[in-house]
Length: 130
Image 1: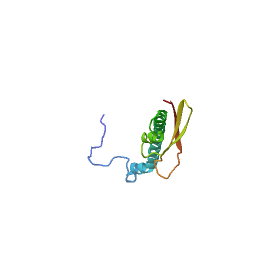
Image 2: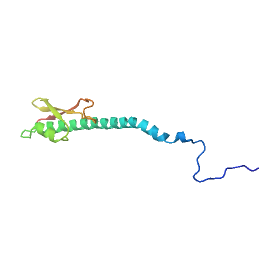
Image 3: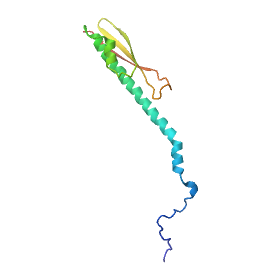
Image 4: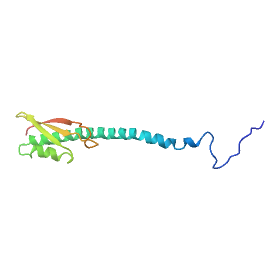
């Protein structure tokens, strides 16, 4: 039994594909592109939140260590020197005669400037006095 097959024609049109379907993938991609951009920006913002938290901990430890030393440097200067220059950091002091406690607050930057206020993240470090 023989089966009738069409001859192969290089460069011929494929079955079932009409001229109206051309470019459909490109249009779907353009429609999905804003969703991809929002997901990417959200991931970047989450990374900035984590980075600000890490920098707040570093600033608090550096400032507390500097303040705990008897003839050490200024705690605020040491804390600011320990973080990236583009971050805004503030300090609050506490403690007793035996120890010093420093709370560092870092303002969380925004991926898109002017859009969204993400607040501040704070970390506290306590060191014994020398």
